[in-house]
Amino acid sequence: MSSNGVPGCSAFSAELFLDLPPVPDYVFSEEHGHKVRKLKKRVDPDQPPRHWDVKNYVALSREELDGPNFSAQSLPRIDARTCSQDEWFAFEAQHIPCVIDNVMDDWKAVRKWRPDRMLRKYEHKTFDIGSFNYTDMEFGEFLHYARTNGDDSPLYVFDPYFVSKYPKMATQFSVPRFFRDEDFHHYAGEKDRPLYRWFLCGPERSGTGIHQDPGKTSAWNALVHGTKRWCFFPPHISGSKLKMRKGVRDEGIDWFMEVYPKVKDDPSLGMIEYTQKPGETLFVPWDWWHVVLNTSFTVSVTQNFCSRVNLPQVWAYQKTRKPCYARRLYFQLPAEVRQVLDVADFDLTGPVEGSDSTSSSSSTPVSSSTGASSSGSYYYSSDEK
Image (cartoon, rainbow, N blue to C red; front, side, top):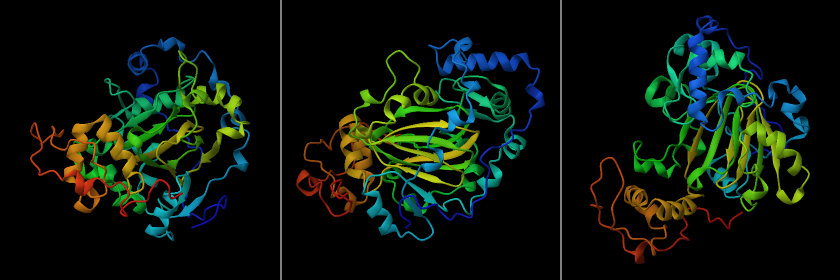
């Protein structure tokens, strides 16, 4: 495990700035322009398509996109080839973001997910660009849009169903070994667990606004090509100090242009800034605020997960916010995991949510006396930091 700020020694080779191939079918297509405008209305009904470029962010310089501290940024670094599972859990329990090196050394995605290769295979295959409101776009159309758009915050492939649509893509990357057997949502079943895995593909200036990941999950984000600019803030910082003002479009680039100048010099906010390079995997702990800006065309994959470290927080969230799902998850978990969950204030006999469930639980519930402890040794306590 390497120390803070020490560059990784990855043998990974990819490009910071990719030349996007032309897509002749769409160059003079009026239908393409009409479809893009229609998709924009679905992605953001409050923003007329003609207003997507009013701030002229397309004219920003490389220095303005990259930020002032590009060469001085650092995060703790973990070498996936040498760090043991126990060492990783001990680090994860510290509850701070980090870079994981050497995750992608054997990924076929490094070659297969280049835009020119994907264009040959997926030109007329669709990917979701963000809102699940009939927002699928053919990859060829998207690539042409990515090459030619002048939008302030462009459309961005954010597809949670890419594995079910294109199963071969699942063979071209692998879950980092630290997280492979440590995602307890897996026990609920692929059909019933919350959305957790996305294929991401976005042009320069696309990104995501300031947010915390859902359901107290942590996440890893593996960048195959391009560069991403991140800012992180600890969970205890109030969102009111970090969010865009009400009524204003909340995109990654808007945040960096409008909020970043106001917060970057305030040490009380504990901001961590980092530009992710190809071959790097970032770990985002549960409840950390983060905002992301693609500073070049990027291709990445990300997953949210529940490990032994954040299991108590995920369980507390689910039993309060989604009790039917929480019951399903509870009865699918291994017995040694169930025994450390706090169920003293939770009705385990109620309805169970799931594609194969009936109106109520058919499993024998564990009594609160056997499962009420939330301080078992199975997981790292949030106090162990």
